Image (cartoon, rainbow over all chains, first blue to last red; front, side, top):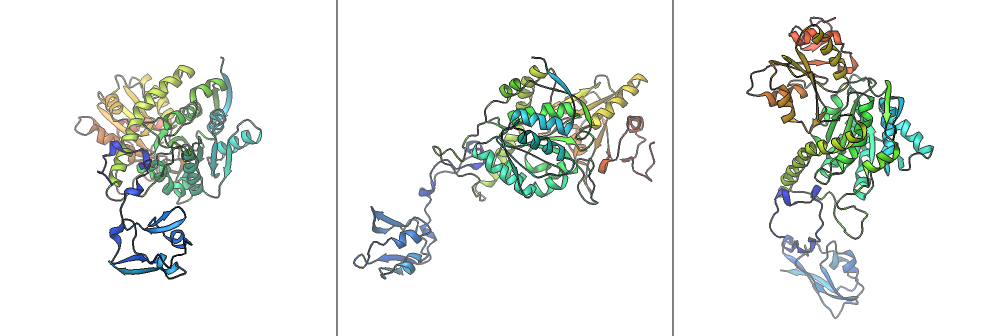
Length: 92
Length: 385
């Protein structure tokens, strides 16, 4: 996130002009469960990517490539939506 | 470049100023006594003499919400309201200031309900006193016109970027016809110039998030930045007023000193009442009484230094408030008292004119002498007239 800024350094109205959302790491919000994928069962339908409320699904082109646990909050939506049962929630 | 002189009410004069400024967007909802402003402007739009988008919104809350959106999208935006309209809008006025949206709003000052009333006092302005917007009180139709030309320039200054309200007394100014000098169209165009805000929402080259959530780690900082912006409006007002005065020949400033030099007693007032007090001052001066008037034009930001300077030699200062603060000190009185704190002047205050009750030049001698009651013109108080 970087150092907190003084009021003189802020844009008028607090307008956010730097794309720094990617640097805000929120994975620490998880409460004990993380997603784990069985790539053998994954069919790259990308429903997990579509339903993830954050940007925790990592793609390689149009293929599923894994999870970004720095932003995954363990909401389980990906596991719930996966049509082939390839995603399972496991203890951290 | 001879200027035209027309017989116009304050409301009509502001409609002409809006036509000449030619804002891109005007979201507005009608309310007495603001109606002639927006009725006049709507006619200019219908007749093809103004070219902006007039948005007939469903409420004042929506008017200010739409105004924020368009101002931050990169469109010069104006609106207008009065009294209950401003009350309904109040929530969004705070947000407009916080989002630093340079919206210009004409306000026809009118008493807040209840009881319901349509006439002038300043209670509507005082309701949003602490919202962070600039509030400029004019004395007559001419000044309402001039100030409406000035307002966009002030609002859009990069160090300001705040809503600017041009406050004119309901009916006394909005509906009273006076000779008003309009500037030539070209001078206004050149004076007002092009509209620009730092991160226009519709500028896809520089994407930005407007109005982000601010938690305890940034809310305080953003409020502090807003205070600085409002304070910056004071020198900015001087600059812009200087430029406009070169075109009009009419002085505009944060305060007006009227026969303050050598005055033993200085009366402090805002709005059209200043005209009334000037007549009273002239009569008293003719009778040998050293009396003057300090007219506060910029109530927010409050010009503390200019007020202190103007009152420095007064033995007595009498503040006339057209709004009350039940259970506390009336707003203009409180400002002046804080400026004079520690000084030796005898300070008094009166509330007058609530809900459109008139004050007359003949009331001035008892106000100056101290014989007038705290609530001037109220029945069953020791009476003036």
